[in-house]
Length: 84
Image (cartoon, rainbow, N blue to C red):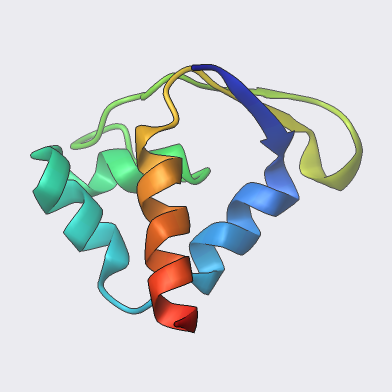
């Protein structure tokens, strides 16, 4: 399902993740760590891949349209578990 959030929100989620979460997401989904970094706004396309993230100019760093929310959903679950 497609979801639109601001770039600032996406970066805040990434920055709020517990240590090792990016690697855990990559391992669970069997994708390169760089692909997960790219999902959160990185630019590591030598090893990672684009993953359906589209950024449009706008306030708060622009709007991010996510074609697939699997990585975002996993990140949000990890954040909730961290708070519990």
